[in-house]
Image 1 (cartoon, helix red, strand yellow):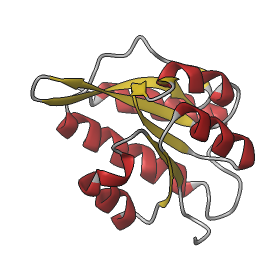
Image 2 (tube, helix red, strand yellow):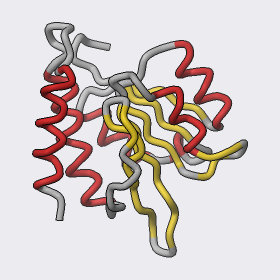
Image 3 (spheres, rainbow, N blue to C red):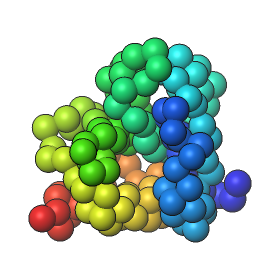
Length: 149
């Protein structure tokens, strides 16, 4: 892992099988870890810091909502996917440690654009170890929201 790597936790029974998402994250230099259940994810979150958590909504032993308390008050961002008839929708859950469940769901292409902006933003503060900080985050989130359809 290099100094600008964004630590990502992929959660769910299909996390290891999501090659397209994994390849996308690897091309952007992310350090990817996996958890197949809510319990495994909670353990991983206790053991290390993750910048980004991407979880299936329904997990073998609970739901993605159960991960949210572990991320509140941190600089982590979390999205969960919800399966629908033809694919999935991505929902915002936590942004930089604050709940944001009131955001609209995103189709995969919309989510990919938003994900790229978040990864670039998170990596930009890691080179000097300072991170972007809450004031910068508020501005970045406002910019991200302007670009959503």
